Length: 257
Image (cartoon, rainbow, N blue to C red; front, side):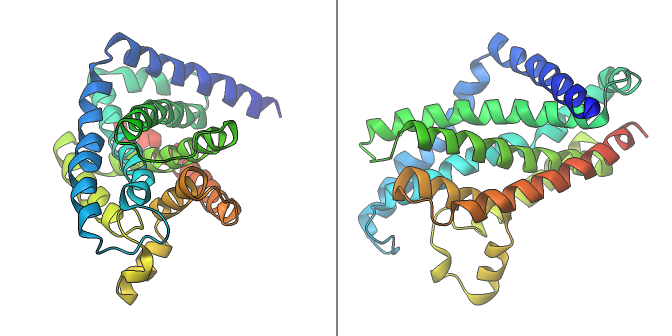
């Protein structure tokens, strides 16, 4: 119990250190806001006029908003491995590793930082959705679940990026592999079209893709106002994030080897 408490406290310290960097240079938020705005303002608006994608009783802009939010969170989290390589090159990572801080705390600190950046993206997307008059459900309950899903989803993809960083070990290789992973995961999910219209093999990929469960959970609380499938979404994200946390903590020191 003492180990868990110590890990949580030090995780918060690591996350708070990362968050301070964001407040010192908020231009990162502005630059990262461009991509979701383009997706909603151009891609979403254009396809909403075509009406070729079945979205049930919701407009296409409503349908795609949780997917674009998920995309923004994943794109932030997946490149955290690049920060790990950068910290190694500066000698910071070696200093972290010789401290008594649990490796899991170092991992959870990065995950928490990615989640905070993801929540900032959520605020930007909510504001833009309001400007475009996209009807989304904003209540204390929905915001709570957005926080939980963002925390778990950002945690999983941050952990995945740290595992990749410990294997490739160079920034150039990491950038290439990061792109190769994120784009297929995004398009092989229910972010911009329903799983039902996919070919059979892609439906299988989508059902084992953690990104799909992020989208499904956010869509349930922000658009559908239903929590029927939410327990499964949370369970899948929790188990996968817990598993990748353990793997990341094990692989973390290998970045410097």
